[in-house]
Length: 229
Image 1 (cartoon, one colour):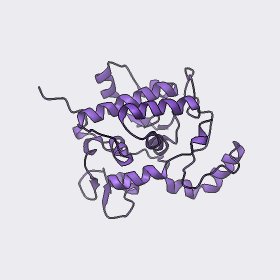
Image 2: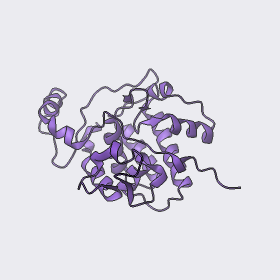
Image 3: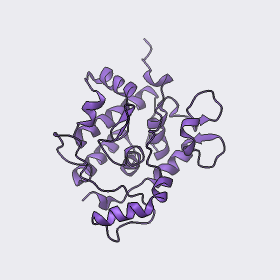
């Protein structure tokens, strides 16, 4: 019996409120002012993208917040289980949701990696869960990390991805899992919106979005671990 390949015709489009590195630069003064108000004096490290620290309690059942040592340690465990660099995984969280468990792109996507309806459907099917977007938004940070691990485990198995994941491959599994093993993920004029809806990922403006470009994006979204007090 053929393995059911849920992701063969499915893509993750980046959320409309995407927290890109360029947007961070455009709003640098406002970000710096907010950081200073939150106690980050002289703590903006060159080479890091710094999300603004907030209480970020995503629901009544939060056992710990994103900005905690426990979150960092569990993220390391998840990264080890899916075989990637934990710094890259945090960078994906930063790029997708600015490290906010309660981030929502309207009714389209929610949570740390912006879970969409098809992704939630597959998590429910594979693991016998009863998830909804609202339930994910109400989850504690540690419970969302459990879903993150489950999601990437599904993609790795269905796309037969082996070995250590690069930052670009990890982001490709989030952005366009059906093509996660390809170097060129999307091209202009394909007849779908894979490229056009995510043109900001084409860093060299050559009409292609590649894993190498996603890897650059991930590196730009690395955060200073001092954030996790």
